[in-house]
Length: 235
Image 1 (cartoon, rainbow, N blue to C red):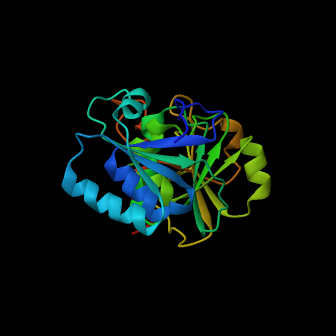
Image 2: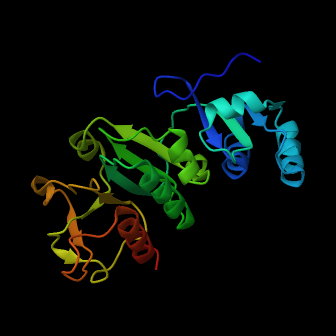
Image 3: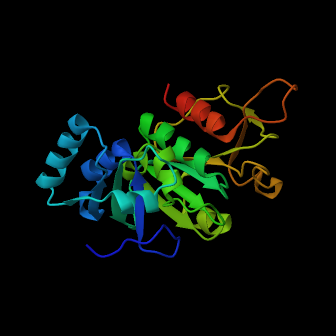
């Protein structure tokens, strides 16, 4: 096996750090998996299931403690799924749009949350964190492999190329979440950056929505906001 380099945004390969996201990789994107690295201390019961799944999909399994130690900063990481980065096409009838997301943990959490509510299309507006970074993959618990993720160079590029009903979540939104009838299909829920939200110049770019909370805080955490929105739109 050729040497696997540490993760880089420019590299064509990324990693699943841990057994659970690696299972999700093999189940959902087996064609992208290059190999699975296993540590000699890995739990045999879980590993046997993973090895069987790899055999069914003709994916190499390699025992390599040194490479795992080099690729992962965590001492308790005993499985790494190595996969080739891939491009996706959006094909669902509802979308989650994140404008300039800047926190890897938040992005991974959002991925897992929206998969739990049946969403398959995620739009990332640049500049943004690298959604193939292993930290994002791990935080998503492998949910990234159940999503179609597409990136746009700017929010304006996205707006002109999409004719879905748009719901922009803003602190000065004109409608309160829960106060209006929600569509079942052909809509996009749009959320801004963790620190700055969506620029006010886009207030009329769609239906602006606010999630009401007490004045004791300035805003809700982004994954919490997304979770509340997808719950309401799926009631």
